[in-house]
Length: 223
Image (cartoon, rainbow, N blue to C red):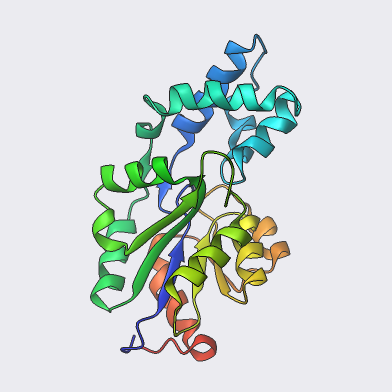
């Protein structure tokens, strides 16, 4: 890459880290507190990525969703956020991008207070200039709104790229005239990402560098 300082946004859950144990465990805890039977773990992975209140509304209904979210956060803020791990290869990719003078940011629908804690816990904060996340009241929980806020804050001179594992990342990028790279190692299927209009798909973190270089011709990313 050249010295145009490419601007790259990374989703957190399902892109930088695998949060399944903590998120699913906290959802199951919330449902148990409400006296409801929880689906199997694999039947709750669809909740990873979208705004959580909306996902909980689909499970318990709109009226109970706020209380379910409270119970969820009771557990998640205690231990759930630590039940997580960084995908193999991610630290090295971030290091190489930083060495190439890329400007790296996190853009996640997860509340900022948790996102900052997780990124710091895994020692990834050294690579990111700033973390953008939602507020506990749900503000900025939709990726399109979040990315618009982030772009307004940093005012990038170059076209930015969004990297994420769910359709919300791709749709959010498109609504802000950004290119997107979908990662299939997370929680969104290849079909989901393709249907959303991802510009490029990758199957492993190691493919990110070449994918970003392929975006160079259209976004003035150059090797």
